[in-house]
Image (tube, rainbow, N blue to C red; front, side):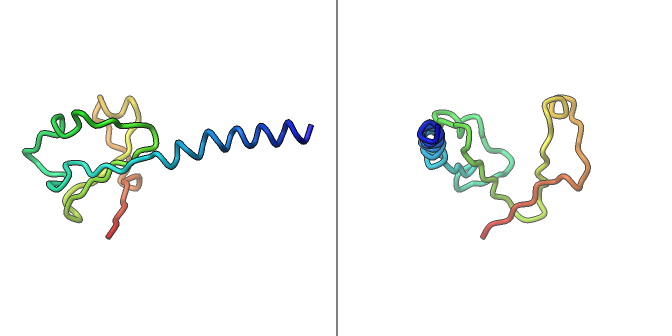
Length: 91
């Protein structure tokens, strides 16, 4: 029983770890960043986005607010409370 449990744990780890290490980070808009008058459709073309990848939106502090919305909130343009704004700053 202990051998079976050890095998299952090993199998889970060996499938999860490679997926985590293969995640990529994409800077949206590359050097231009998150701005107006930019063709993001063309920017995304040819890129292979996968689950676990990170999208980085570079923009001046205070210029935009990033909000997390659900599947019905997006098409209906329903804004969540301001307390749910995503604020992540990196230097």
